Amino acid sequence: MNHQNLGPSNHKSDQTQSSSDTVTNSCPPVLVETLEHRRFIEFCDACRRYAYIGLCYGSPGVGKTLSARSYSRWDKVKQSERWTPASADGPPLDTVFYTPPVVNAPKGIEAEIKRSRDILRGLARRPLRYEMDEKLDAIRHRDEEHRAEVLYTHDWLAEPIPELHPTYGAIAKDYAEKEQAIGDPTTLILVDEADRMRMASLEQVRAIFDAGEVGLILIGMPGIEKRLARYPQFYSRIGFVHEFRPLAAKEIRQMLGQLWAPPDVHLPQQQLDQESVAAIIRITGGNFRLLNRMLTQIERILEINGLQEVNKAVVEAARESLVIGQA
Image 1: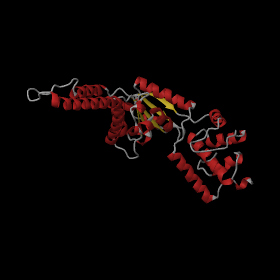
Image 2: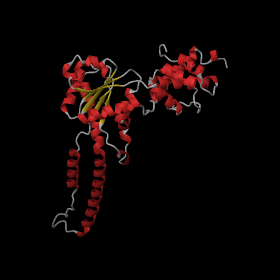
Image 3: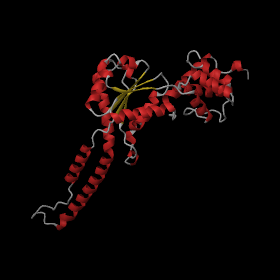
Image 4: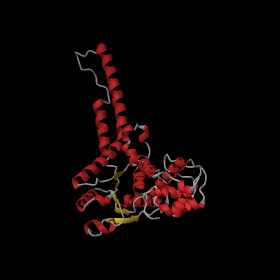
């Protein structure tokens, strides 16, 4: 096939871009254990351990949000209503992932973060509540059988029906005390898109940090560190700064060599030639989000043109369907 004919028409190109965005938004990329992600984990662990404010910044699409959501396991928290006692096993959920709305106010931020922490507190107490419900149900069943039995054998007019121990009320009180002893499990708060917050909202976040022994990480675009430096009251509390960098060319080669692809993207199960790999690295520049979209577009180009192999021409045709600026 003539390489000049690769790729869809303009109308199809718009459809291809829309399809790629839909895939990216509805099915977020699967996390890849890159060097930057491991560095981010170490950064988060340090902020949690020392209860410091941390500042993470990086260009759009390098993987900041994906790494933060993965680290906090916030998707698991969001599915908490489907949990059973067995699925509550495993490491405790102790990290809040919060994204402020575009239009935000200090009071709203305080309420939303409190709500997220209450969710974690409820999940920490859930196994105890399951256990309490089972014991209380057993005692209720025991008492009902006891009353039915003594109704005919006990002189209940002479003296009250004897009470069995432990009583329902004693067990309920005991579990209420145990539940109260489980405090707030939150040890780290991740605030994504921190650039959206004005100084009043940032001060509200700082007040939350000052009120408890928790770590706090603000995640934003390059330049947020310079903006915060203008506010000594806040900046003096920042203990760690982390720059989230793009993927290295070596990592992209390794990922492509392992035939990695985004979710629901099916590419030919064969090694790419070095020319195609070099073109993908040059075009994406190590941007993880752009790499996902590029591979999604390559799949579309192959499908539309009935091709079975990825080459440089296919990669260049996929690039024409993406809004990525100059290569």
